[in-house]
Amino acid sequence: MIKKIALPDLRFRSPFAKFSLLTLGAMLVLLIGGILIRPIGAANACSGWPLCGVGFSLPGNFWEWIQVAHRLTVGLVGVLMLILLLRAWRSQRTQTAILVATTATAALYLLQMMLGALKVTRQFPFYLVALHAATAVAVWGALLLQVYFVGRAARSGQDEQLEAEQAVQRVNLGRDFLALTKPIVVALLLVTTYAGMVIGAKAWPSGVMTFWVLLGGFLAAGGSGAINQYIDRYDDTKMQRTQQRPLPAGRLTSGEGLAFGVVMTLTSFYLMAAFVNLLAALLSLAGIIYYVFLYSIWLKKATVQNIVIGGGAGAIPPLVGWAAATGSLNIPALFLFVVVFMWTPPHFWALAIVRSKDYARAGVPMLPVVRGEKETRTKIFIYTIVLVVLTLLLPFFGLGGSIYLVLAGLLGIWLLHSAWKVWKQGGNKLAWKMYRYSSMYLAFLFIALMVDALN
Image (cartoon, rainbow, N blue to C red):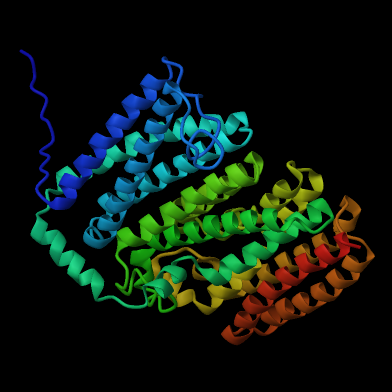
């Protein structure tokens, strides 16, 4: 007897649901058109953008008209994607799966359009050709998933209208979205990224290169921070330090937080790949995966060594900068990674001492929660000694000279004194100072390496 396969109950009742189907239909037409123009020889008929000749001159033959018609269809679908995106952010804020799928679909489509334009106007490396093709598949898959989620939700127009009216009443959205990116953390990461560029090239990077690397770095780190806040949204309600973040405080929905993080991280990879180089893009992507999946989802609540192992995520930005400036990595570049990796545990353990009750309530096994404050203070001092010794050995591995050595020594004394006071005297006040001082220490250390590299 043949078993019947139960099909999912999909209903498309609302205006947004019907518009999703319209967009899917337009995308199907575009996909079929893109497949057909290759066999008939029109795929490479145009060498200009957006039309075929220089500027906006009209096509000169039948094949060029076919290619222009295809591009106009691409533009039309792009407009539909933008409208779908805007409507989702108005009427689907509480529907996490729908909002994330819609945002990812629109972002991937627009990024593919960007790659398509670049492919026509400049020499295209092979990896971007492959990325352009892979993105087309990803867009189609994401849009099918989006339509499925919309159909499963089976929302009414009244539901969506009510949600849209509530969205209009909100204020300070820009500030809340900025807070999702953890801007203070991102600023420190961008310092190490830029320093990696200068140290690697031993020269000031160009303004254009600096713009794309720092923009991509901001999007990668900020997007990862937003996804991290989505993952931690329930734990954040239990911690005094994080209760007023946008998601636990209810100023933004979970879907908005996750969708915002997803679009930032996707965009960061494409911009790095298109305007910097593949190695920098892959390193940046590795940092995102490390922080989101390895640290936030797995390590943070699994082991007392969470911040020790997880510190590798924050140690990747200087490698991104180095790879952006030089197109490669070498042994000295890896020492920049090791410096940040060793700096991370004492920095965050100092914060964990101050917020140990918060971490205990949230069930996060930070060192002072599991092993106690005394052992944490001892390890802060030991790790700080190792960190300072490591920074003083960098000149033996091709990083820094006499200027750096003097500055690193002075900075090391300052940090060691702070760590020694935490070890000997204890208390939240000294631990908080250690946390703040260690942030400044890392920034100044990388600036010292930059100064030395330019001399």
